[in-house]
Length: 419
Image 1 (cartoon, rainbow, N blue to C red):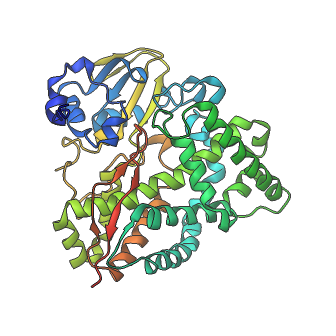
Image 2 (cartoon, helix red, strand yellow; image 1 turned 120 degrees about the vertical axis):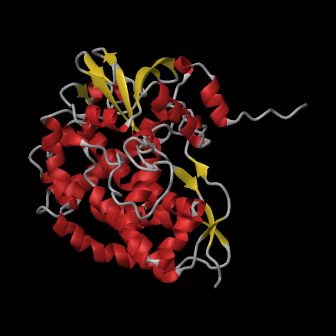
Image 3 (tube, helix red, strand yellow; image 1 turned 30 degrees about the vertical axis):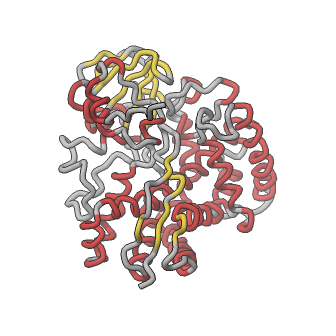
C-alpha cells in the first residue's frame, strides 16, 4: 500500500477555489499550516465569506484595519452569548455560559469593573515579588543536560500558581484549575475523553460546586483582594450564584484568560527564539531587550486566534455588505501578520521600534483586562531565564492543540545544556 502523498500547504492554499477556503478548520492550526491561507485571503479577499464551513457560514476579517473596525464597533457587532457569543461554533443554548466578555454594554462594563482591581498597578506591584520568587524556584528545579517538557514543567506550573494566587485557591489543589480550564476549551472533535457538550458540562458542574463553596466562604468574610471575593462582594456580581450559567461563565473566563493565553506565550516564545536563533543570540547579548521581546512574543504567538461577533444591523466592511445576523470572525492571528500594518510582519524581531502594535489583546471595550499581568509574568520569566541558562534547545516540533480559538502548545521537548 502506497504512503499518502503529502500536499504542500502553500500549494494547497493557493490552488483551491477562493470560495472553498474555510479557515475555521482546527487542523490548520494543529498542523501549523495556517499562514498561506490567510496570506491569500489578505491579498485576494480580505473580508471573506465562507458558505457552510465546518462551523457554519461566516465572514473572515483578516486585515489589521478591518479587525480594528469590527472590534471597536460594539453597537454594530455584538458579543452577546445569547446571540452566539465570541467563538464561531454555535454552542447549543443549554450549554451557553455568559460572561462579561460575551456581553454587550452596559452589563459588560458593570461586571468587568468588579474584577479590574486585581490587575490595577498597585496590585501588580504587590504580586511581582511573588511571581519572581516562584519563577526562580521553578527554573532552579529544572534538569540540565536531559530532555523534559517545557509546557508541563514551566508554562503550566507558573500560570497555575498564578491562578491559585488570583483566586486564593487551595495551593495544593491548583492543578484542578488547569484541568478545568482545559476541559472548558477542548474541542469536542479533538479525540479526547471530552467528546460532547454533555461530558464537558458534567466536569464543569463539579468545578462549579467547588467554586460555590469558596464563594459562600468569601461572601461571609470581609472583602479581600482575590477574584472570588471581588465577585462575591461586587454590586453587579454578588448574586451570580443565582444564575448558574453566568456564574460559571465568568469563572471560566477568568480561568482561561489567566491560564491558556500566558501559558502558550511562555511556550511559544521559547519556540520562536529557537526558530530564529539570531534573535536568541541578540537577546543573550543584550538582556535589556526583554522589554520589547515580550510584546513580540505575544504578537507572534497570538494566543487567542479569533473572536466572533454577530452583526446587529447591516454594515459595510472592506467593500463587503455584512447582513444583520451574520457571523463575523476577527482573525487576530492574520491581522498580526498584515504587512500593510506591521513592517516585516512574518518575521520574529525582538527589537521592533513599535513592539506593542499588535492585535493579540483585542481593542475597544473587550481589550484583555489582564494584559499587563501577562506581560509582567513573561518579563520576569525571561529575565530569570537569561540570568541562569545558555540557549535552551528545542529538541523537536511541539504538539499543538486541535483548536481554532486558542493557539495552544500541548507539549514542547527541550534541553538545557549542562554548561
